[in-house]
Image 1: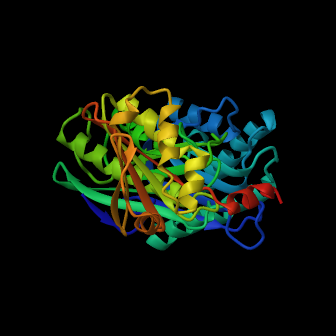
Image 2: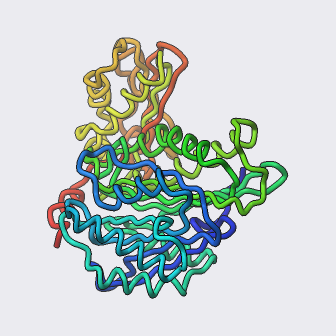
Length: 407
């Protein structure tokens, strides 16, 4: 497997376009479209929030009941959540407009929205945006990057990645883009993620691969503990790589899963590292656990701890906050056996051993915690299982951004 430049247009047969539709933003693009030259098998995972946005309901139906998908229309600025039957009607109108412009079935069009909850979509602008994008679809890397930029809301950077690997004597490409910065919490987030591949793979295995992989990627990140109404991950496979269709869990399937994991983990970390107002990506590793479930619970508890996140922002090696967060997680362990390390590009430092602080240098610890990517590793010495979660520090700017988000 090798990483290459690009995102959603990296795989054969996929095109993208974007435009400034004026949905909310006056000075930037706010709509994007992804299109496959041929029908693609589709898989998806969605928010666990009981309050589900209209696009989530639309896409779940398409992914479950339609034979294939061929286009995705995305808008930023308005979430189309808590908009009742009218909101679901907007999804249908958007799909109908795209179907008309692209000469494809309505039930092959997926839609996604991100932005302010409770506002109705300006359908005249949405329809005009679709009409502008359809004839401008392009397979270039630049078009994919422009699409990744257009779906941003409070994101500060565009997020995309692509890889290639060999299977069945053919080169297969997987590429993706996402958006996500706030209202991000395990079990999906205010995140939209779109992954495209030219692999030939059965819908059943495509779905299984995605649903298994999100457990260790998107579901292991948190920015602020808020699970959104719009969280969506869509995976499209159009088979244009020409490999023999993957229909069983053989070496080709394992290679596909490995590449998909790289895409999803990379995108997940990009979101965690771009948390609203944050200055650092905060990674938490639990090793030596008795079970994977135990390790997951402990790591998630630490990255969602507001006190720990504040300590990371202050470059303060306040290890007691980490041990405390592990203690109230609900997972059982012996705190008197825990070793804890802080690590970054500036070095690695053992902070506690068997639950007791070592005579470490606070100056060195602060230096390590001042890097843009910081890792805390806790060894609980109970077994061989492990898990990694990703979050970010908690800053003054997070409050500022969310205090006036609607304006």
